Amino acid sequence: MHNLEKSGVSRGVIAKQTGINAETIRYYEKIGLLSEPSRSSGGHRIYENKHGQRLRFIKRCRELGFNLEEIRSLLTLVDQQEVSCERVQHFADDHVINIRKKISDLRKMERTLKELSSRCSGEDVPDCPIIDVLQR
Image (cartoon, rainbow, N blue to C red; front, side):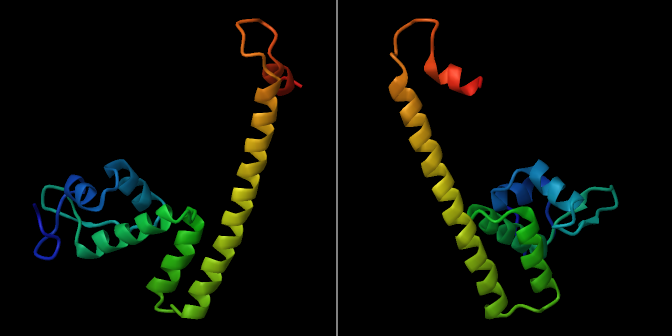
């Protein structure tokens, strides 16, 4: 396995090392979350340790449900060396509020679908109350 500490690696290698799809890495470069790496004399991208660290940061943020703009804001704090517990806690607290709203919305969807499903006979007939409600 290639070591990012010693030398740069290809997109495929860094994708394996970080668990992030190579096309996703390309997308992160395109939208500016990841700086474009230097290139070899043959024109191949050479990813360094800093790219791997940033990709792992982005991946962890995504696993916690942060959207790309929230991640961009967090990375801006990091890049500008303006990280403070207060600012990051504000991001986290706002995100918890959003998560709670999503959980509430999911519970409402679950109740609605359960109620609709309970109206259904489950038999192989053309009349379906679920479809009827969805077509209104």
